[in-house]
Amino acid sequence: MLQRLEHLLGIEDLTREQISFILDQAKPFQEFQRHPLKKLATLRGKTVAIAFFENSTRTRISFATAAARLGADTMNLQAEASSLKKGESLLDTVRTLEAMRPDGLVIRHSSSGAPEFVANRLGVPVINAGDGTHEHPTQALLDALTIRDRKGQLEGWNLTILGDVLHSRVARSNIHLLSKFGVRITLCGPAMWVPRELETLAPNVRRVTRIEEALDGADVIIALRVQTERLHEPALAAEEYILRYQLTPQRLQLARPGALVLHPGPMIRGLEIDGAVADGPQSCVLEQVTNGLAIRMALLYHLVGGAAEPPPAKVPDKAQ
Amino acid sequence: MGFRPCELPAVYARMMRQMRVVEKRQLLSAEEISRTLNRLAHEIVEKSGGTKDLALIGVRRRGVPLSDRLAKTVKDFSGVEIPVGTIDITLYRDDLSTVGPQPVVHSNEISFSVDDRDLVIVDDVLYTGRTIRAAMNGLFDLGRPKRIRLCVLIDRGHREMPIEATFIGNSVQTSDTEIVEVHLKEIDGDERVVLVDRVP
Image 1 (cartoon, chains in turn brown, orange):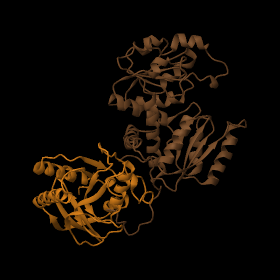
Image 2 (cartoon, each protein chain N blue to C red):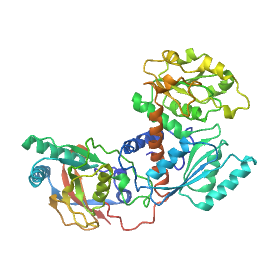
Image 3 (cartoon, rainbow over the protein chains, first blue to last red):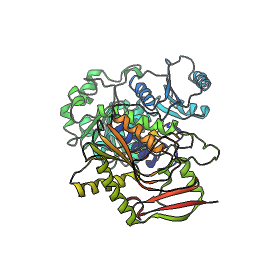
Image 4 (cartoon, rainbow over the protein chains, first blue to last red):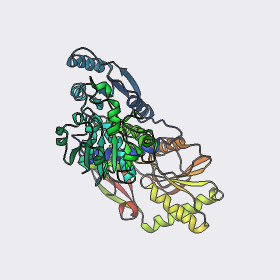
């Protein structure tokens, strides 16, 4: 029997069965995006607080749309990262949220572990929309759904992740998720962004310094954005990054034929990825966005819909 | 029994996990089911003045094999293949969030447009009518049918919604504690309809 999820804080602690369940449950919501009327009453009367303490447009809009299509109301909190001591501001944040009594919370925060801290304090379902450099579980889930739809299954192939893996919560969540299915993972990027410790994240993870070697035999490639805002100074000049690590059509040829290209977005065309690759037939970026909506609807449906405790026994509802 | 708990409305499922039931009587044998469906298929075509714009929508779960069989019978006697779709009503139910963890959702499978269609919803048992209300909600999200009618194998009364079936296999008087169990070989392995009651 599948253990029921209370929060979605990360991929690391999920089982294969739980992950497969979420992906399977996203399928009806994929179909739903094609309905002419995209509105359900499933979460009517529920309020989902969407608290983003880090800038984001796409993820925030994706969650807000997912909640709205399920019929829920949303509380949209967008706060700039506080300059106060992180622990202190987060406590204040939690108290404010408690006072508004939401039925569920989606939180993005610049501190790793913040969603867990909040989940322990709040007593409503919490979904992690990205915390520090720790995890971005819904991204990994939508990536897995995209790959599974194109390839048929999540086992028995090779993944290459290109770029600043060290600072990437997307990469970490993907590594946790896909290694649970036995995917062989290759990490490649500038040396200080791909330290040796990353190989200990999960079984079947290796580092490679040259992109040509990293792409050889790759069935799926995830290109990460160069995160200049995370660094005080870039480890490499942009020109050098492009020269050594940009995913170009020529380099893509080194991978397996028909290898999939994913990018968590937003893409910087001409930096980590060539425009031709981003727009080419192997690119899955638009499917990723659509699937993000389906995954988030499935998660909100299961986590926010449904009471934590069944009500006291009554005359059975004649809902046959 | 033929039901997996997560397939049923959640209160029902909990009830069935907790209780024991005793079979009271068989309502339809395999042969009677077959004759009934045959008669219903003819009735549907006759009362629709033919097969023009006709389409069947099976309500998950047991409405699905029933609608497939009806379509096959129609094809056998008329030569016309009427479209068949499947609808899952989980997202449209009205007993949400009162009964614990959310039930598993499934996809609809309706490969044709419902606009201007003469639809017949097909389900195994008509009881309170809430399932059919939800099914209509789902269909209206997809477009604007010309007409929607309902075909059920068993009408057991106790309506809580102003819903009626045009095509009825069998009407049965039941009490609140009784359950009408439809067994179909595609899902349950065996083929019959039985009336069961809860053991106190």
